[in-house]
Length: 148
Image (cartoon, rainbow, N blue to C red; front, side):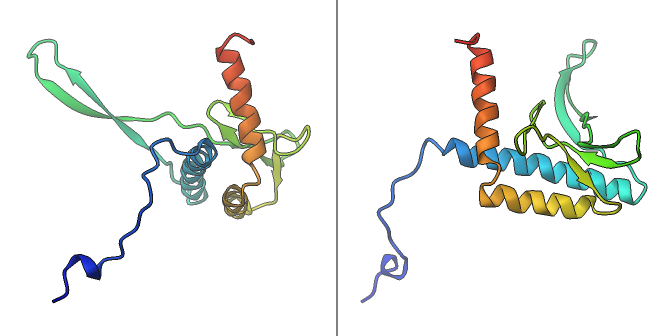
């Protein structure tokens, strides 16, 4: 008689309690890139993109707890310079990533913004931005520690 457990694929792999920081950085950057993509898609349609956050507040008069949905302040990573070129800077938190030595922005052809986001997503998956993310994280860590 076959047991129900024998129909499952059993394995002896340990649970990872401390995720890889490189993978965490990639996921964080991809999430930020997804927000920027949604903003760009809305901008292309002539609409505005608003992401909300929830906040619990207690009414001072009634003492009742309420949940508010407040708009999140998002800044676009792209802009137009004085010559009319569209440029994009990839941000990680509040800092700009150095994509190549001395290069912190990408020049974008007309109507190619969403294609650039796709290319950046592929570069993140391929690990091409890992060195820049590590450097930025180390710099931020040293700044928090007081430059030790």
